[in-house]
Each structure stands twice: as structure tokens, then as C-alpha cells.
Image (cartoon, rainbow, N blue to C red; front, side, top):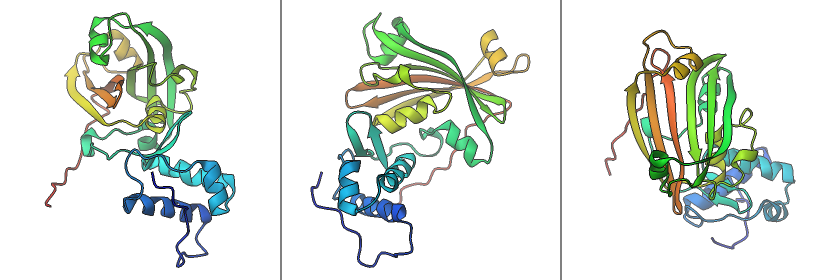
Length: 249
């Protein structure tokens, strides 16, 4: 990471809100290559001092850049430039709450399970851990305007995400929390259709014999598997879609 002090451009528009100027300043450092993917940026305290801005203003700039996946904040470690994004369109890792809100609808979440478990053979293999290793496990039901749209069954590496069980996932999604707190390098996806179990049919309010669309995702960082999640969707109320643009360079 470069240690040069941050300075506003001399032609900056003084009428532009300060937090937006700070965002543009940080993005310019990233775009210029001075801060590269994975680099740690100056602390919030240092930015407050160097930019002569309030902590609230700097915090808003960093928070919005994190929500835009330009930065990633790791609890206890600091704020980093996000790795280059490898997913596009259909296979992009997204926060379901943001997608629902962006459609102008209301997202809500019911946390059905939040626990520490010993991994059985199949999940231990997916997580890259020995059988009976300890892991975190969550099951959440996501609703759009009160209607179930996704049943999320997730396993999380407790070594990489030690504070996972201490979060209120009725307020922040598990996916949003992980995206904000640990930088991933790549992910594997598998999409399938399956016959719904009795439990899935009840929770997702499926019609009789309605199948579920399943997205299984395994997400990695440099230290191993972060999380394995199975996302179940009602086939009558959900579809996967994406736009792919070929690289012509």
C-alpha cells in the first residue's frame, strides 16, 4: 500500500458533499493503481486527520464504498481494496436484501438456525476440513414483501469468520456480512432443480409437487473455503438470469 498522504483535487467542486469527494478520492487511488486489490487503505482515524473531515463523513464514504464492493472491511484487521471481481451476471455473488430493496420491495429475514456443528463427511469434504471438524451453520428464510423467495442453508469456516455466531442476521444478511468482512478470491457454483422436501415445501410455501431451484456456492479466500451455501428457491416465483458481455479486447 502506498503511504502517500491523500489530497483533494484542486479542481474539486466545493458544492459536492464532502463524503462524495472522499469516495472519488479513494476510487481515483484505486483506478490509478496506487492502491491495488488486497491493499490495506489508511485507517478511518488517519483519514479523518488527513482530510480534515468528521468521523461521520469518512465513515459514510467507507461504508458506501463497501456496499458498492469497492472496499471490504475485515473486523479487527482494517479496510482493504476488494479483489478483482470474477463473477458477472448470473454467477455474481450478491446480497439478496439489496436486490429486493433495489426492486422497490421490502426484504425481511427469519433466522431459523444459528449454531456450531460437527461436520459430517459430505460437508467436511466440501469445506476442505477433516470429518467432525467444528463449523458454524445457519438457516435463514428470506422474504420479499412477506412472501418467501429463498431458503438459505449455510456452513461457515469458524477459523476465518470467528464472530459469525454473534451477529443479528435478522438485520443484516449472512451474505452481506461475509462480503463486508472477508475478501474472497473466487467461487464455484452449481445450479440444479430438485424435488422439495416436506420442510422446504412448508417454509417456502410451495404448491404440491412444485420443485425447488438450487444454487450451491462454495466461496474461497487465500486461506481456504470461507463458506458453502445451498440456496433453495420456489420455481414458480424465482428465476436465474444474467447478461454476459464478451471481452472484445
